[in-house]
Image 1 (spheres, rainbow, N blue to C red):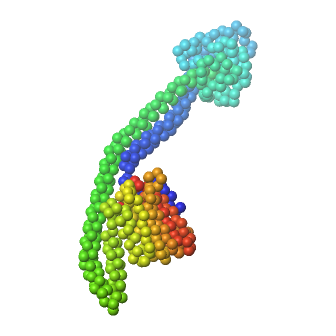
Image 2 (image 1 turned 135 degrees about the horizontal axis):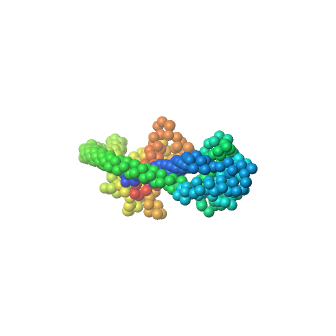
Image 3 (image 1 turned 180 degrees about the vertical axis):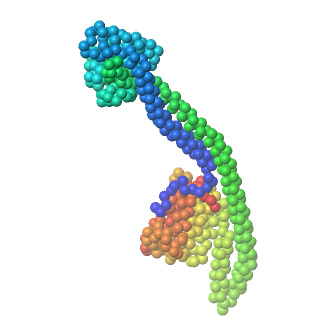
Length: 443
């Protein structure tokens, strides 16, 4: 198989509607990609804002509310239980308003050894849990920070009913200067809501931009497509006029050749044939008449649309008959195919027969046209009994003087059909072309 069938190769009108739809789809997909990327970025930004706000709020609460309410007794090992209870009660009273109206759902005060000195959850007070490296670093450097809470940790067991939380911590000091760690837990739902708001705003911006671009681009694209299509139609009309003018000139030349020189030479050959002494000259003149008629057929070949496919193929085989080959053409009585498909068949047979005459050294050439089993394609077969050749030569485009095989492949490629070759040295040559009946190859 030299050329495989592929409908995408058919030449014809540009599918402008698909071009327009493709541009719109590309713009929408591009907008969706930008919106998705923007949503991811906006979520990261929202998380960053939430951590920063939680850190800032906790630091302010610790400095303004918690630290002024601290008493040394809350952390002093030698303080009595009554003094510790009073210190815890004073701190609870100071933060009560914040717990009622603020975003914090839990507060804790830690000693450096991991003991919970105070919490709005009394069951945690007095329990001891190991502090993480970030907590210890905050105690040493007097800085604030925030992170998503790990609710699987035992010190967070009473916060598990509040959903995901963000814990922020800040170092505070008792009046005597002992560093303690204040920790506030805030709902992470606020972070998710803020991220959703940012995603929505970014998606609206992205798709709004795409809509504006499409509103500006589509009219311009439509105008360009209309101009291009108008130019294509103008070129087709000019090409049609040029072909009509060429056909008219060919008809005129063929008529003059038929009514003038051919008739005169045929009459002279007839006159000379009556004299035994001039029969050789008469035979030469008859041969010249045959050659002139072959040339006339080449100048004005039969058109498959006007004269039928069989007549057109008979004309293109005139050169083989003039060269002395026994030529047969078999075509169905009725062939339902587009004009472009019929023209492709004629061109193919012309080139294949010309190759046989020029290179094949054959005595017989047979042309068969059939319709495939599904009725969707014309199957054209040109076979000869010539010397054949190495089929590998048919795929070598670079060899000078062998344009015929290239033209045969181009006919198959232009129509979206397939081309097969069966040959070998000394075994003749068979070309087989399958052309889609609805092909729209340019003439």
